[in-house]
Image 1: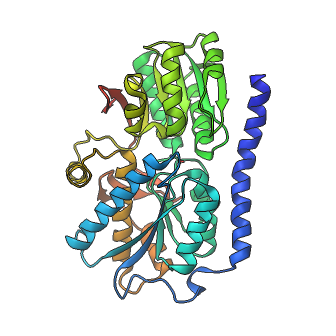
Image 2 (image 1 turned 90 degrees about the horizontal axis):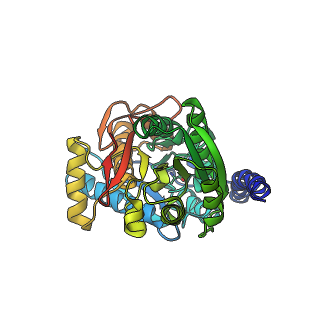
Image 3 (image 1 turned 90 degrees about the vertical axis):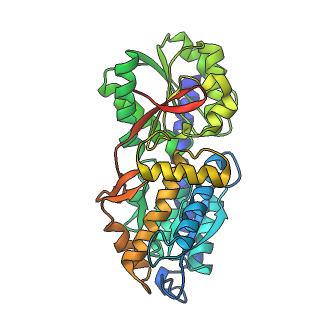
Length: 395
Ligand code: ALA
């Protein structure tokens, strides 16, 4: 029964991604605009570089989106008032995409056609990026994803960049370290199969587990709206695994981790992907989160002085610790400011795209930052573990 549901969901998941693309195709046909040709061209001259920030500020992914907005606001203040990037000012317009494909498309249309932004930062979810980024590509508007980690996002085209390490970079490292340290031989896997990121995370976990000769004793799936995971966890328990591997966004992850501790035991190792990189895991799952191992792009304990300065400034402004999502968004604002500086006053969207592509070895809170030839992020991944309610480095 689970198998039949699994294959139906797998199909729906793939159709979901394609559905996003066809939504974008319809939106393109409806608006028929084309970037720099759409009215007055967007430029970085005559004042500040206008950036559209599309984040999930409401809905189940809002814990990521709020941290991203906070971080971009902080970076923009530093850039604008302290002259952190000489000669550059950023004017950032924030819109809520609610983690929803249709809302994301509407936000992108507004940024592209009405606000005539120079570049877009966001959206929060890969699912939304796969639906909305094609509009920006078609209109020749550069996009910098700061949290999209699914496969296929930057393949949309040459205007689409991201500073977020993909699951395909982070997960092999996570699995290798978890296997070595926890001596894993046999695991159960639980993943969401109606979301581009959780599906990609599963694909990468499967490859990495196979490559490390870790046996997958049971594979179970869930859907975005699910809150109850006991049927899947009971199946996994029956297969007697030594650990649980999870590919989920934060809302589901909290329920899975909490219920897994009740059904599979207090001490069973749980290994997760990028969706678990939020303090909401600890604040909402409480003690159940202790010991969860999470692949990430950034950790709060990193010695990088830029990172430590960022943590101090973020805490002072928001009275909260920043997370990986905040760090990537903060780095993203600086990457866009650096590109605007390199493109020069009066530069348009194409010059901005070219300048983004030329960024190499930029000192950021993520470390020395470069884009790959395919416009993905290039810097070393880390593995975190929850200890005493905080993310520590897993070593
Ligand atoms: N990393 C998650 C995604 O790509 C937030 O959707």
